[in-house]
Image (cartoon, rainbow, N blue to C red; front, top):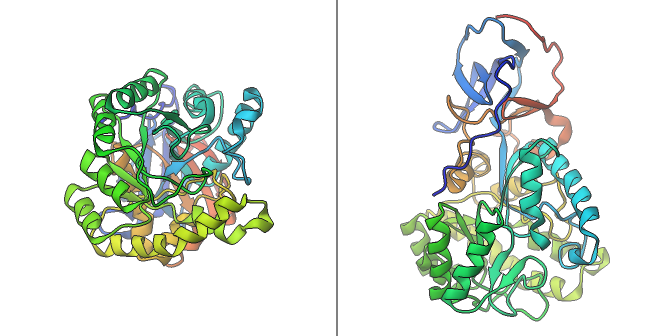
Length: 419
């Protein structure tokens, strides 16, 4: 897979930062280690240890605070507001207006502690342009791995708003190549119907196994990670056998599908939050009736499938489907709470949004270790004791992306100090 470009580094003369005496999350032991220092240099973690000597570094006293890796959301539509109908009808609004709004959604997401996201579809490939604007420093936001448009069959889920239609293996290959040419850094294929497209049944398979395999081959040739929208049982199995890296949603998993995913190391990105909001927000929130009906159809089985997948040893990475109705930018951490409630421990849910997510996306982030991206969230409480603090903005004392302060609200921060 693609070794994603390292985070944009600080200027060569930028002052290193030393975070002092924090409780630091250790992915290997799934615990917080007290009294640890973290030295940040050149956009990366240089060292983690006790009493680090770093003359000339800026010192930030993190005594009593908890340091975790920057959070990662593996399934967003960050150019969407999360208002009912926003994704489906985005193309009706002028592109410049949508772009300005997308910049604000990216800022909210970053300030909520999400330093990396994977965007799996946007009208006009606005996600690719947003990712470029963030990389160039024009817009404040998380690192964005953008799929451009997804690839679906004619009339399939996503057509007309976040997907390009294609039929037959050769046309699917061409569609994937088009996304790569446009600058896509990840690829999305549609293996089944879904909730948000009218006239499409989520229980129905979409692209065939042969079509999916062609798309996967093209993506993997270019070292891109492939996520497959797959809700139906047959669609999930087709996608896993075709070699996708992650199943998005996975609503109707049976024993064979779970076994296949566990054997092949295919990740599940469940996005439990999306149908939950659609079903519970309902018509009163202005969500179209066809979406509400289908959300009720999938919700109970979706939660049951997630629990079965966890019990069956399937790898899990966190994703919200942010941008779908009532899943708003900056509220992404609610999915971490939800997957903890549905089968993962608090530590497992945190790993799904950090280390395991980074492993799926093949990026040098997700762990507070030397050489990894200096993406850090500093908390005023222990998320292993109460995972819901991740959803509380007042509990976030700091967000650092690639060694740069996004927000830092810690009393006693010393600039230009020494150790």
